Amino acid sequence: MATRGSVKPFVNFNAKHDADVLRKAMKGIGTDEDTILMLLAARSNEQRQEIKAAYKKAHGKDLVKDLRSELGGKLEDIIVALMDTPTIYDANELHKAIKGVGTEDKVLIEILASRTCDEIKDIIKAYKKEHGAKLEKDIMGDTSGHYQRLLVILVQANREKEVDESRVEKDAKELFAAGQEKFGTDEDKFINILGNRSAEHLRKVFDAYKKIAGCDIEESIKDECTGNLEALLLAVVKCAKSVPAYFAESLRDSMRRAGTDDETLIRIMVSRSERDMLDIRAIYKKKYGESLYSTIQEDTDGDYQKALLYLCGGND
Figure 1: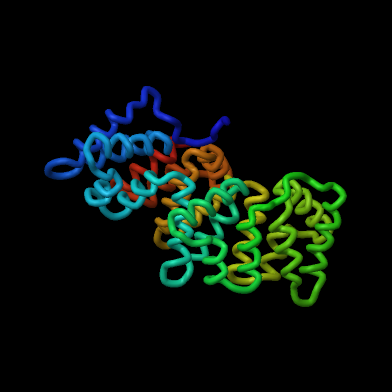
Figure 2: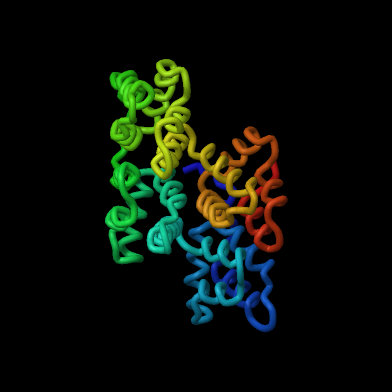
């Protein structure tokens, strides 16, 4: 599969050699952060898993534990995040979002709206294995109302695969009738159509909707809904239109505000680095007139900045 990631597998990879380099960077007085972040950011996730195994075999120690004890702050957060497989990383982020104090709805929304059905099925398995619990049940226990219903539909990961031409117009009309035309909103219609149709089908529905309503579906959602339901519906719509565009916008929001939302910044840079970072960068540049690279440079500093820039992969 052709990847649009900025991080590619390292050529001439040697797990044992990398494990030894990392051990040396951490042994003795002071830690060589530069070596650690340069090496790990330049390896694919699969290669990092091999380095973990080689490290344990050669040095009898847990690489992630050693990294945690040697690094601190945001650099530690990003390096440790790089060491999980993408599926386990997502499962852990969801678990943290649900099981912490209060619910980090932003994390639930971002992951469940943007991952493919196959990815979500894998996340559910990993969640069960890592945390001994059912993701759906945990979500039910922590959320409520229409917001909960849409999350549960997304966790079913049963989105249709194709476009049903005969239903495009009907779906658009139903959405219009459920929102703009009605006093009070029929949220169920929004939830069922947006939660179950294929992305390609939805793009056609959105075009048809615009002709009927005279505005984008996003406008209607903002008028009709509030809070977490609004945020989730908007994320689903944006991801149906373009997942990389959704992440370009999320990255912008995580930085161009008062104070940087480092958790979101790290999560997106880590989880998209091998998927579609090149597309995210291109859309970011087009939409905001500056490169993602330069925004990261202005918004972050130190070794943490270096690690983010490695994952970004270049200046556009």
